Image (cartoon, rainbow over all chains, first blue to last red; front, side):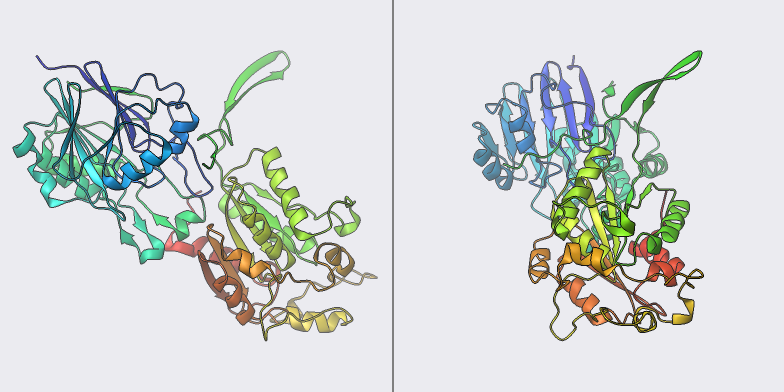
Length: 251
Length: 266
């Protein structure tokens, strides 16, 4: 019998994934700046997170790698932190003592937990993750573009229980509107390939402030576009649009 | 390590109990509107009040329009000796009001003030709009010195079509810059030779909007203002002079809202 699996979105791409008794925190972001807003409540402070067994970080952008907030909040810096080399260098500099570097298709283990980096593509170097324990498999898509190799995950890892994907198709205006995150349609295509039991979108409520939304970023803030696209491409897959703080149990 | 504010703490949800005798109601109040702080130029608050109405009505936003201390005969604290000190006072005002995602919009001297507010790096200010601003030094494009000019001369520099200038009420001199109040902040030179260089380190988005017929500070001066700011956009308004919010307010509003190719979703 496989372990219980729940996911609680803390905010943006920060998720608390619990497999059996193992608690994994993804892409931490707990503060805000003049041009970075979650656009939704953040469901936990660093102090009230409780025990975290592993921290996984896809890339070093502030809204995914707010390690300063973890340090300021008294987070246990002995917690294993798993991420690509670009993140590892920053994490060590911030005082994290157990940093595991993984690049695409490399794995790290923490007790019964296995975290395998899978390919990613973004404005900077990024990986995504397959997170496994207790017979359960979770795909965590960070804020990557859709990368073709990700379609092979079920072949390599077996059935996926939960897929967490970005959906806002974020474009960077000063870079001639270069797209750096998969959009709802692309995320739905990947979902159809991964065939998870449950899919949860994230990374859509974020905004850059009034002027920043017009001059820095352009993103789709409506998660229904993803749910609609999945309903069209893979109607058998269950999609949950989740407010921060809601505990979602994956059957 | 930079200590950033915890998400949500700058503009917390408030719970208040209101007594509507004999009824008491407890209300949770969450406010995520995007406020504007409008900053007038030397002509005083009257040059901005009409646009404040337009902006608030069309965007359904909260619009704050302070009278700079010392203008319109208002008291001015001795500590307010320069533009940066006034900028600090306005950031303190935003703190006092618990506002975030504030867009600061300033015309002429107010544009300089908007730039100084942006440079203070308050997490409450998410962007600035500089409309025919002054304050930087641009070689070969010195602002027109209005001191000693007649009202008619000032109007010829300030308006694309001087016949559109507001008519002075009977017996009054009509709107004209309050030079004494201005100099109280800017000093007699009315520019800061360090401003352009300091703007080079700014990482906020700034929209620079200029009247094509501005004879006080020319469009080339405006282009230099935008070029001094890394994350800036420059918009030229046709048939418009130094005071777009008075001469072509709908065009100024359109420029504010059209930026990025998306309508205001208020």
